[in-house]
Image 1: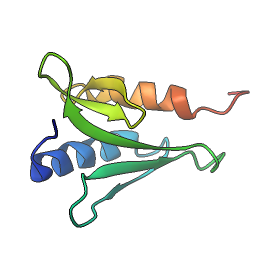
Image 2 (image 1 turned 90 degrees about the vertical axis):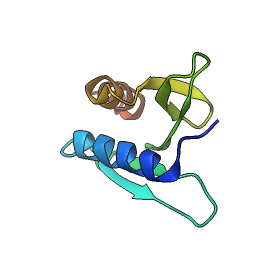
Image 3 (image 1 turned 90 degrees about the horizontal axis):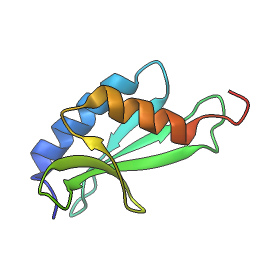
Length: 93
C-alpha cells in the first residue's frame, strides 16, 4: 500500500531537510512511479540508498528502505534520519 503521491512527496521533503548537513538527499519523482528520496553519503559516495513511504503491517505510514525494511514512522523524522545515517555511515566513523 502506498501513500498519496503528494503526501509522500511532502514527507520525503521533510526527511530531506532533516538529513541536510549529514548527506545529500534529493527527492525523485518519475511519471507513474512512487516518489523516493535518494540519499548519498558525500564522504563515501558509494554509500547510497533510496527511501520510500508506505504503510506498515499496522497501517501506520512509515519510511522504508526498498528491500523492504521499516525505518521509522513519517512523524518521527529524527529517528528516521539517525537510522539512515547508521546504514550509510563509513566503517571507521
